[in-house]
Image (cartoon, rainbow, N blue to C red; front, side):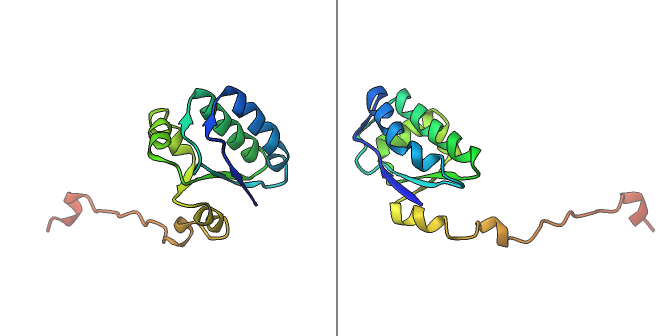
Length: 125
């Protein structure tokens, strides 16, 4: 499990530096990575690329990347680019870390049973 603080400005140059810093964590077996956005003030297309690269590398190794403490401005960018649907997002890094240790909610939901109805002609007297 790795919690990584994102830089204030996740631009092209900062993104390259960040990817070098996190590369080892993403190449582990089943990497579980939390990206903490609490310091992020600017997120552009280069930053989106960094996020997608991290997710791709983690998923290649049966891992996952979760986002934490995403500020409103960055959340808008994630939503506009449709990237928000690819990540689970949490209010704090601690909540994101804990989510790796819990069963998914859908694992406890009962399977949906199809409802069968009789054709109207069978119900007629």
